[in-house]
Image 1 (spheres, rainbow, N blue to C red):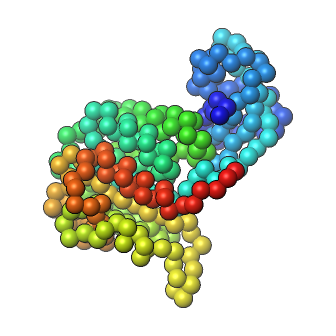
Image 2: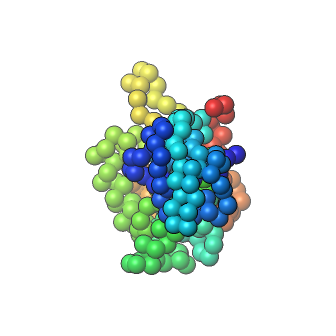
Image 3: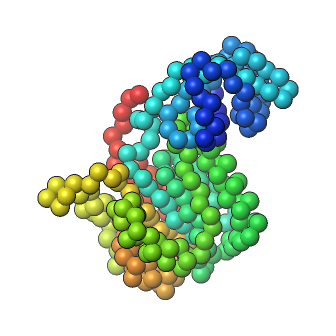
Length: 269
């Protein structure tokens, strides 16, 4: 695979046959790889698709490339949007969750503070952590071939986030169309059965033109408290089970994302 470089959103310079200077992060990547003029690279801005390009000039502060042909590369993205809302695991485990779920095709990640959370972030520290995790997601996209970068959303308390989702549910079609499952060990339906019964809308009910959207809520170390899970259920979340074994806070979201990734048949680009 060619070196893949993320050039940031909304720059508007990725036009065929344009000779452009790379942004600082991408330029540094090229310098670390010790690429030379004439070497091919691949550029993407996170909004979908990618551009072939060729290094034209190497300098200490500036790297220039000639932009080539655009490819949509749609086959590398899931045909459904999966959001993972999770009580943040401690240490480097959150980095691992962001990296691996990005590789598996996650649409967005919502870090949460729950009753049993060990990791509690607020203010500037929370902002810096989210920026760090967003960088982890970008790096995972560069490595895995993804052309859309998942959003790592601002840290919120679980209660505030549930109330926010409830308020949004009837205000936007995308949120109203989303299927929502809370991972549970209490009277929960096996996730495979739940997914089987939650396919695209039946034509008799009015076919939806919206992309399938799914949100899964997962707890931190120690899991969600009964009060938190009950609150989610009261707001319309379906309790779903990954089996009888107790999975770690970083294992459960990876398992969910792996299951969701298998719902799309692989295609060639």
